[in-house]
Length: 501
Image 1 (cartoon, rainbow, N blue to C red):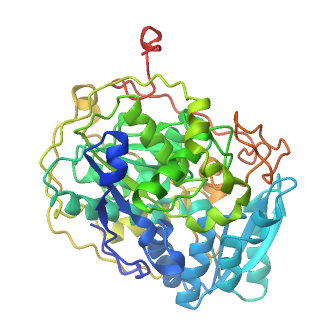
Image 2: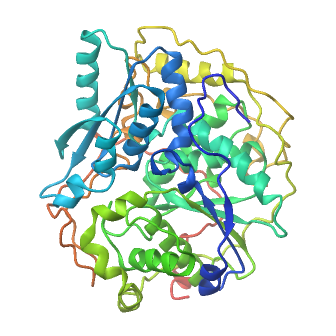
Image 3: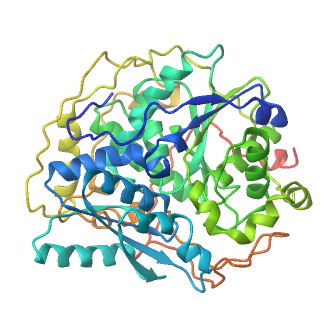
């Protein structure tokens, strides 16, 4: 696994892998587990600390003294960045965006309280203004003052940040190896895509036959899958792994509802079920919708009672307090979900049979390769760095990953090296590196967008949420979609003849 000198210890690792017997019983699942990445510790925890260990390590290696990042007003990434900067003695500046007519709690409660408590400087802008442009302008001001800013994209989702979840993949496999039964799939929220991309890349490098299912919290399936695939492919290429097949990435958008931070009956039911059966707090924006997807997959029959499934809890509990208008609805969650049942038509393909893995085997590659890949992507994107990064890293190689033959349709490209492309490798940070310049579709508006007006789903009042019809899209023209490789049928790809099943 990557062990680089640039990494700084921020998170309390490893996070627990806990059985969820009561929630599993409610879903008819005998082997349901929760990967508690909400318990990473610093700043009330969350998944972003794994990414920040590499991102802020890189920032310090470059001599940065101020960290800038972007997000929505209730961004979990922004809150964890502020906490990590406080720990490391770095100045932190956040550019946070809000939609039309935001509720008072959304603007001042939850994560916003913590951002201020951690000492972050907050710039608030109204949609549809570009957060990335505002961040770049602020960085220029700081440079003129003699400061050395380091810019982090939305969600920390980029090549350097991805390595946090490459390491998590190995950690998870070590824990799975202690279980008495196989794990067939991992389910998690999909927003900016970096967490899923890192897990996909790490499991691919370790040749683990475990499917990773992302549950989109916004956006459409095709765009989200394209984003994750590009991020994961760039990560595999940096680690000199074999080519990642397109079929390795699955994102389902059935539970996204009308948009980011827009409530759905299924989300409300999922939050209530987790709280009442396991004492586990989910948030209404990310983990609530992801858990709704997990519940739906069991109810639709994609997962069987004997399938081992891991749900990755990525955190976000402070966000619960930013949406007080939802409090009375959690108590009615079961009735709301029953009144507005979700019509899904998931194809019930069999999950892959788990293959024997060596969880202790480390990922191939060297930290010099990792640092070089990040540097090359910045250069290819014509982003000028004012100073050479002081990155002297070594990756301890415990063993080569066990590489098995790809399925027949990918055999021709299984050993073909993946060419690094600037469009497919968003650059991170640096004292002049704005990720938007490398690939706007990845970093500008893909996730962590503030709640905008959208019609509230049936039977779910939207009082207190932003209600203007401002759609969140990437600045400028949308990126062209890459042609999808043919692959075996996956969840969500159902023939019309089976739609009624």
